[in-house]
Amino acid sequence: SGLKTGGVFTPTKDDFQKVYNDVADLLENNDYDDGSYGPVVLRLGWHASGTFDKETKTGGSNGATMRFAPEADHGANAGLKAARDLLEGVKQKHPWISYSDLWTLAAVAAIQEMGGPKIPWRPGRKDGDLSACTPDGRLPDASKEQKHLRAIFYRMGFNDQEIVALSGAHALGRCHTDRSGFDGPWTFSPTMLTNDYYRLLLEEKWAWKKWNGPKQFEDVSTKSLMMLPTDMALIKDKEFRKHVERYAKDNDLFFKDFADAFGKLLELGVPFEKEEKFVFKSTTD
Ligand code: CCH
Image 1 (cartoon, rainbow, N blue to C red):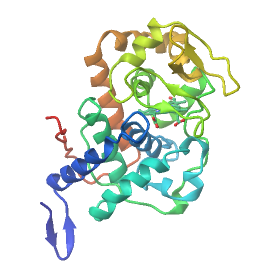
Image 2 (cartoon, rainbow, N blue to C red):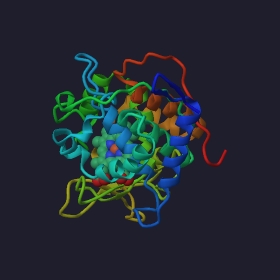
Image 3 (cartoon, protein in one colour):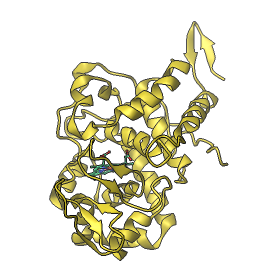
Image 4 (cartoon, helix red, strand yellow):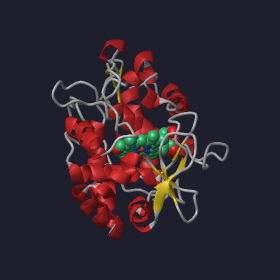
């Protein structure tokens, strides 16, 4: 466990593994959504990181600026308070960890605990203040299509293959009418990471849902699944579709590329002092 040098606590890998374990213990909960906080905790890590702009080197997970009103109130972040509040107890128990390290580590725990790949992770993020909040509009808008997806993700430094790999996270969780306005899950197993998102995109027949809410697609056969306009753009666009087809056929390839892209996402813009990354034990290991 951590060393105390001159009153400063220097955490070791074991200390971070304890944080991982405490997060993992909180994820399953039958009173929440589909029985797990995993999806919303994963989304918190993504939205904390996905504000990065490579030109100005602003945004990204460093800072955890979603703690503050301007960023917490951005439309894209609606509902993420559930995840921030859940993790507050872990922060109180391990006060030495920054919120920015905690949120990204928790996203790693969520992925691993929902059956996803190991995501090597390293500490070193520092919490910022209100002045580091990013302007609204840096996260993707689900009502748009390929041009918008490229503008948003290229700004972070991702390419087409990485965009498609990251989008596979929509195997998990659901849309909430009181958050984004959209409704429903993408897959039949929203608490288990699989390549089903890609398979369903290609194999199901999708049609516009007839309702008063924002424009979204539903699967024609069961009418219980959904796709956003941005999701459908991945099979409309030839370059994107190529990767959807690769991941639909090969779950191992999806896991490998997802782990690489998600690990990169969590590190965008962070001035790390150390190279070493930790691979956490999952509770099922
Ligand atoms: Fe997402 N996502 N996401 N998403 N997302 C939503 C929910 C989740 C977009 C829009 C939405 C990624 C990319 C995109 C998750 C992970 C990722 C919702 C519903 C919308 C809308 C929110 C609600 O109502 O609660 C758009 C547009 C893009 C464009 O690329 C990426 C990348 C990731 C992670 C790698 C997860 C997980 C959820 C489920 C959250 C939950 O609460 O169940």
